[in-house]
Amino acid sequence: RIDKNNILEAAHEAMSLAVSGLQRSPKARSKSGGKAVKRPAQILVDGNLIPKMMSDLPCQTLIGGDRRCFEIAAASVLAKVTRDRLMAKLDKRFPAYGFKAHKGYGTASHQAALSRHGPCPEHRRTFEPVKGFLETGRWPKRGKR
Image (cartoon, rainbow, N blue to C red; front, side):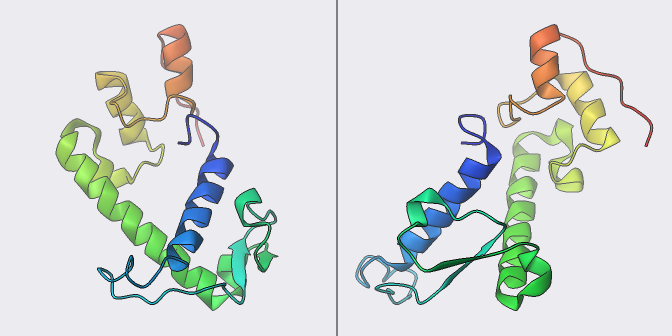
């Protein structure tokens, strides 16, 4: 999704899908044991933009929400734990890249693995350095930090 649109649109789509999942009928949610919510009383959005698909819902934006709001901070922790678990699964499928260790961040070891093996199907084609490699056939030199 990120390569198709952009990271913000993908995040907004994910938020909208999560909220619509809360609004499903109890029968549809019976597998998870959750109860449907007809209309949320308030939806807290970390950032400064309300997703277009949620413009008719009672949303409140909070810049720096994970530092200011317990609920957003808790959601952030859950998202990171989920990401780490997904990276561990990717690491099993593509062990040469070390996803379990770097979690997808552009570390020196991640970029070294990209240089050795090229991008795997899961690498985002619109993010550097993969984008530049696909355009030029060369990997950019890693700058000093």
